[in-house]
Every structure is written in structure tokens, then in C-alpha cells.
Image (cartoon, rainbow, N blue to C red):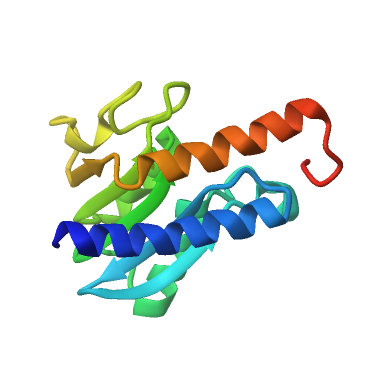
Length: 158
């Protein structure tokens, strides 16, 4: 993929993050791309769905598997606005993705660089490429603005 493609797909993930924010969810968005085509897009829905697994990338990967009719997503790239957590990185391993591109790092829960690097753990039966920092400033600004409003007690933020 060219860098311009990564930016274009990340902008779609950022739009999903905006949709999450509009629902009062933590603004994280994800898209899954297979052979240059978006096959799934999702945003955080943990509060809306009352589900701990309703992370943007988890939902997008599940939808991608449904769209493709298979659980192996070996020719797919996941674009996500925030560095995936351990659960989502684990799902990426299980789905056998080819690559993950993320925006902002997550020093408290990131599993692809910040706290762990599960995507390159030689003890596991799969690894995938990671590109970090694509549209990182926009991703971080969405998150910091959301949490600033939350701390101020705004009504439209859960």
C-alpha cells in the first residue's frame, strides 16, 4: 500500500470515530480493507451495546469475516484510529490479518507497541505487519477532546 492509500483509509476510520463520538462512545473507528476495497467499517459501541467486546476493530473484523464468508482474513489490513488493545490485537492474530495500521498510540492499553508487541511474538503461530502513527494527531485530538468534555461533565458524553 502507498502512504496516500493508508491516509485515505485512515480518514474513513476517523469518520467512524466521529460516529462513535456522536453516540457518546469513546471515539475510535476502524475499517477493514481487502485487496484495496473497504469490506467493513465500525466504531466503538461498548456503551450502546452494553458489551465489553464492542470495540471498533472487533466489530469491523467480525463484519469482514461475515462479508467474506470466512474467518481467515489473511489478505486484509485493519485501519484503526487508536492502537489496539490486547483483546483486539489477539483477534487480529486469530483472524490471520496481514497488517494493522493505527493512528494514536495507547500508553495505557496498546498491545502493538506501547505495552506489548503481540503481533511479533515468535511464540505465537502468526504475525502481522504494523504501521503506526498514520493520522496520529487527528486521532489523538478526537480522543483528548472527548475526554476533556467528559471531565467537564458535558451531558452529551457518557
